[in-house]
Length: 542
Ligand code: AMP
Image (tube, rainbow, N blue to C red; front, side):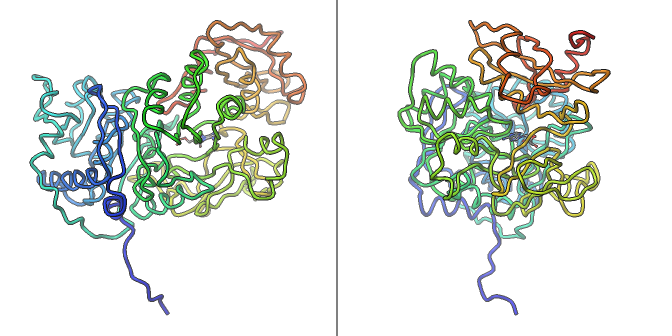
């Protein structure tokens, strides 16, 4: 017997319809590439998204055709999120930090028909447009007055001219909720990039889950500034959860430095933010150097790489801002875990609570997870056994776009490539990427733990731990360190700093001071590149 409830597909167009109807006067504020501050409402987003739908029809794009964006966080990008997917096309958000050749490659692989780009990225488009064989329409995200003459890009027109003539009346089509809605390529370190292809159903379910109190806890009373880019896993789904809850959105555009982010937060009463640790390092640096405080910021989600305990402590103790540590990945839309306390933890001391809050968090309903050993057998959830972390759920990939890389699943589970422990309360702690694990004398050393200790030293800005060949122990850890500007620390002092904080045999054998740690296109440390840079390095005494 089937249930007798109404059968309505979960479509992204419903989210924007809801936003318009129930909180149409909610504000969206953007720092534009043009330099000024733009403000309008959810009702305006909805009307202009429908103009996008009409404008795409006029280009004769059919169902599931791909529309690419190369753009910062801003209101026009938001309109494309809803207009492209809502009208049945697939939004392909491209990461502008990738090498231009890689951008051309993924544009061809995705068979993008339209490319919408911020003027910041005009030089990239000018360099690669002739290599993007499927793109028929080039749209600059500006008005006609800001469009330079003679770009050499065939048929280039401004977004405002493109949608300006289109009607804001548009009946969103209804279709199977499993239809593709958007795609994001992973910056994998081996092989060609592979795309996660999200559906309307997966995106809507993720939007509901992300808004829950023990997940991102997004409400109509929040003013959210997503620093996490809209070109990386849909800004962790925030635009969709925002439409669902009616919070205010504040977009930083291209100005991602600490000063610009801080000023925008203060000016717009931002209560909530989200981003990777490297961004927050810049923000905290700016606050400290200028003796500033936040007047409205209450919470921030930090994820994408392990959030160093020192950063959580600085936000909490110095600025009264709660940090929510999150873990996820492109293949998971991206949220997998978020770290919040349970009721039984409320009586614990602050120190005991902090030990829990440093972990990556508990599984969100909708994501099932387990850890397995080398033999594929499930390991206990005791907070000690560590193994490969596998996940499954309705917003986890089943396979990559065009079947790239073959079948990624192991008995229905997606292997994340991360190594983790899970404790009896379900809290996950990521110890490493499996390819970064350091094996010394048959025992594993967590590079994340070593990095967290190093970064707790007041003179250390950033630290990356890698294993180096050792004839007796196979590998020994060393730590590459970037010092804070104007601060000094010696190798021996830093090695001594590890004493008592980890087992003796896990203390790194050496410290290498470097000017910068190589970062990838999504702000994560590129250990492969670091190992290349250290290829002539020899451990002390060898
Ligand atoms: P991406 O698909 O580019 O978002 O990268 C996903 C990967 O980033 C994960 O598989 C983890 O290795 C890493 N990652 C994300 N969040 C965290 C976190 N909170 N702690 C440690 N690693 C993380």
